[in-house]
Image (cartoon, rainbow, N blue to C red; front, top):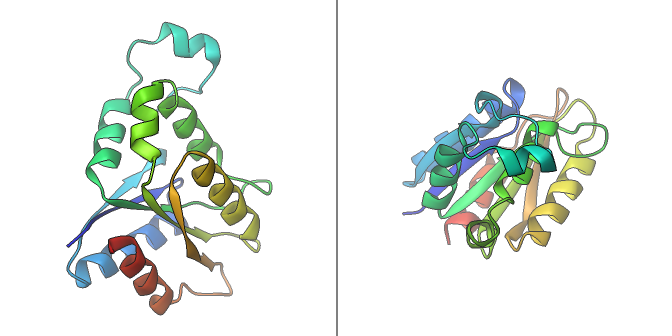
Length: 165
């Protein structure tokens, strides 16, 4: 049994997709949780703020949930051909503590998914590049859905199986 964390960068359709992953994981006998970055009210990252804030609201809980999971599924819509600001902001804040940051991401299995108004391929490429750069092991299969293309349950199950191995 694996512990999987679904990290969604926005509420709405991407939160629903993260919930589908969580339900499927539990149906396969795994422990799962959903973390909605839109509910974590972090201030916008700037270098000046990173030096003056001792405690970023929600950061301790965010790190704790991420560290406790064996693998993550990151679910995010495409924003201007890349990742949404909530995800970029969270990654920027997480990177301020270098040692914890490396331990958090290095060798962590990550699956990528999106529900996007457009094709969604750009956000998958951007997330794959970012998480690979951080040292994570990004699985090859991903899930892209939109208003005309439902999330494929077989893809969800296969991704969960790969992340749980």
